Image (cartoon, rainbow, N blue to C red; front, side, top):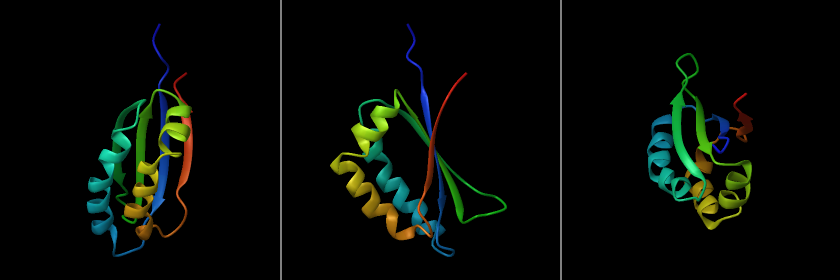
Length: 99
């Protein structure tokens, strides 16, 4: 039986003028999330019309892998230390499943 994949979609509003620094911090932070059990893949995109808006898409085995496995770990604390200083607003995060 195939395990359903969950997509975490996070829209990130970054302080104008700090986008390149944020992208560099993401490259440093990505291995933290990738080390989580249930992680499948991650992709970060940057807006064309709104270059201060980034969208992070992470594939997980389950919502629990994200919320418990990552968000409740020390890796998440470090993730926020690396990325949080660049946020212009709280990230907007949602989970979706294929139909």
